[in-house]
Amino acid sequence: MRVAVVGGGAVGVTAAHDLAQGGADVRLYERDEQLGDTRTRPRDRVEGSSHRAAGVLAPRPTDAVGAEIASRALDRFEWLSERDHRFTVEPTPQVTLVGADAADKQATLRETVAAAGEHGVDVACHDPASIADRFPALDFAGVGLAAVTERAAYATPGPGAYVAAMADRARDAGVDCWTGVEAGISHRGDGPRVDGERFDAVVVAGGGWTKRLLAPTGIRLPLKPYRVQALVAGADYEGPMVHDADAGVYFRPHPAGLLAGDGTVPEECDPDGWEPGGDDWFVDGALDAVANRTAHDAGADAAWAGIATATPDGEPLLGEVESDLYVATGWHGHGFLRAPATGEALAEQVLGEREPIEAYAPGRFEGVPEFAVEEGMSL
Ligand SMILES: Cc1cc2nc3c(=O)[nH]c(=O)nc-3n(C[C@H](O)[C@H](O)[C@H](O)COP(=O)(O)OP(=O)(O)OC[C@H]3O[C@@H](n4cnc5c(N)ncnc54)[C@H](O)[C@@H]3O)c2cc1C
Image (cartoon, rainbow, N blue to C red; front, side, top):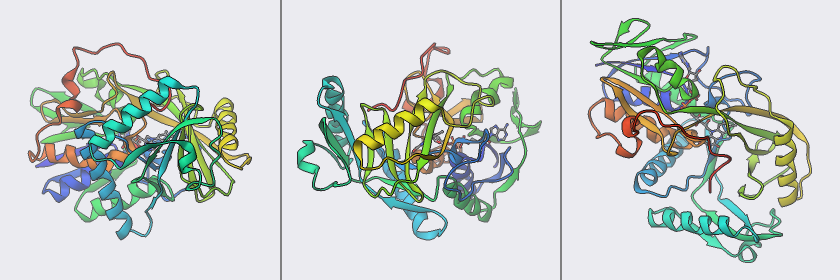
């Protein structure tokens, strides 16, 4: 079986690797010159999101499919971390904080934590006073409710290291990697093609470019790329990963000190036309939130943006869109932490070893519904 994978981010390299391991003859197309890197912060240019992610691996799935994907992804991250010296998974609990006055957010946090707990996630709500001794790096003033996800981690030196490590494994498994190639997709009656060449199956793992990549086929995806942001500050922070739900900011330890993020701009952007630097309002707000919750008052050493992808119901688009043409996108800012499992699930589907995941089926909508990009990380 000859399979083309278009897009060499975390999802594409995983799918390519797993397809080759499963016996397929795989060619991977990536328009960037490189598959992954070991940088701790991204370049100042438009590029794939797997180079620009914050590397937070703190899933809190609220349904069975999400729980299976999240758990499998963490297992595979840990497996790779034990075997590849370039990529490390640092186990660190994640603490979510909601203000004493935010009754609605507290109720939502309790609901999502209960649902995640029912699906096997090691997470619980706490009175902030009861966990203050455990997390001395944090100031819990004004916090009404906290939740701690115990099995969480972050990727270091950066998310690109996962891509680099998996790409090497993909090459070892026989994947033919074509980098520096901007591929074009078509689908005539006889099946999918890349740059005119017919393959038995084509997987489009083009992140925020996926809708544009499919446009020549006439397939319209309910998908919107939008900007999200992160920064690195030289603060000497060694506490847990934190999601401050009131401030709309998360932060975690980083080799250079501390990484903070979110900065969602809730509107569709041109995947090739976004500003790669961080916005002042995001930098100021994120650093304020960090100063509020920790003893650190450092300035930003670097701030950047990248694209995330939204769908009408917040679930991914993973599966077949036309005969033998598959997509994997729509991660709502959580595509890196799921990539080892979503890439695998799609590979298994293409190889006929797994049934499609119905909740993620790209054709589950009536036509192409109108929808708004949701603001910020949801609780
Ligand atoms: C600032 C920021 C912070 C984030 N933090 C997190 C986080 O902490 N945890 C998390 O889980 N997620 C996070 N995300 C989201 C995460 O980065 C993405 O969901 C994930 O990287 C998507 O991976 P992907 O492989 O689907 O897409 P990408 O990594 O974007 O890969 C798509 C690839 O397709 C290539 N491509 C496009 N067009 C073509 C073409 N015509 N031919 C060939 N190649 C093409 C692109 O160059 C790109 O490399 C963050 C994102 C940003 C921007």
